[in-house]
Length: 237
Image (cartoon, rainbow, N blue to C red):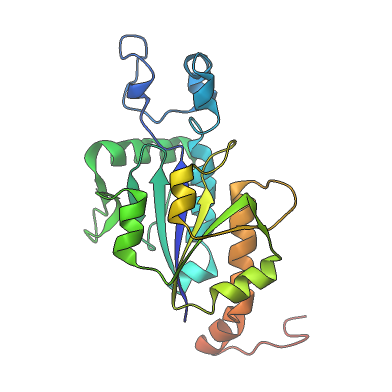
């Protein structure tokens, strides 16, 4: 069955230190967040399109980790940050649903390099020493796809059919609120698709593609059989 490397690309996950003086801010080494650090970011308008929105990554990761695709271990989830860090997300990770706790966790991750489960000793989150292009070269997917409003208009069902034709495929969504993928990102991903005539939020794109892939792979039927339950019209009604 298809293995999907799902990457949140150019994610606005970074520490405050590059933008906010430690002499000014009382709590350095925190995630840059426009809702908190707006007066510093507004002085640098070019940053606002791709910086200061860790909430996008938070919400999207919650969707991915709780998806049926992930429960069936068909996803490899990564976050590529706007300052070229690759973050591995263990599929067993249970992220905080509380946004403030999430920011604290990821700030700790960027400072220490990894987060380890205190009970199982498994690595839950890890900053890996690859930029995006070298990561893709290492993984060697059969196809690389970027989902962007500037891509080729494609029905989501057709795109899902294309994806499941391959054994291993990398899919990128943008982890930023405005602007578009950089030229280097677009060169790294060979195919560019748009699934709607209007720009959509990252979490909307993610939920649509994940749900459609689960349907195309008939994962509901597979899971009912695996758990010894019968699915069918009228079941449970």
